[in-house]
Image 1 (cartoon, one colour):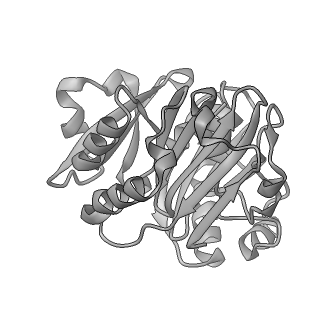
Image 2 (cartoon, rainbow, N blue to C red):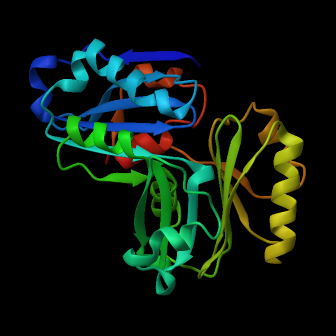
Length: 275
């Protein structure tokens, strides 16, 4: 999906102060949606693939902001989700400190020139998500949306589908086109990591090995991202796991009929986060 634009007939650029803007930046591109506060309804969705090297991302975003007057309008509130799976780690909060954040991060990941550390607490699980993001990207977003806090996309997924520890094990799988983030949780976070994959066999290999490593057999598997019930990935996993589902959009809000065109779950985090 290189480009997508869904605009409900009720959208009015003159009333953006009654709208909520939610932005998503991840491996599969740049997206944003708009929810009308008065109707409690999503009325706008934009997506565009952003391919190429990370250092050119800000230039491409700058061009999109210049071309789309909606992005520069005055909204009631704005939120931003950002995801860099291969740049993300999870550590117990007892081991985290601002003074040693970079050193802790570099035990597992490489911190490249121009990248800055960004972290978010996962309060329910006494952990901290650390992610390295391009410094120029953070500066650009804060310039365009002063005072904005950039939230990790996977944390939005976790908080929506498994906000509190329980005794029921759950495997959360966030799928991008070429990377996957896997998280196993119950009363604690048992596993968290990201991998590159090419097809459903690669994905199955990782999931089976995570199952073996965590010694958790009877769990619910929840898929998110570039997947639907017609996907080869979905049918392949159902051959090995008895409880497989795909995350759904929240039922606490209305959606324009145009959103019925969406092919998979890749925008669910964006839509659920904007509530």
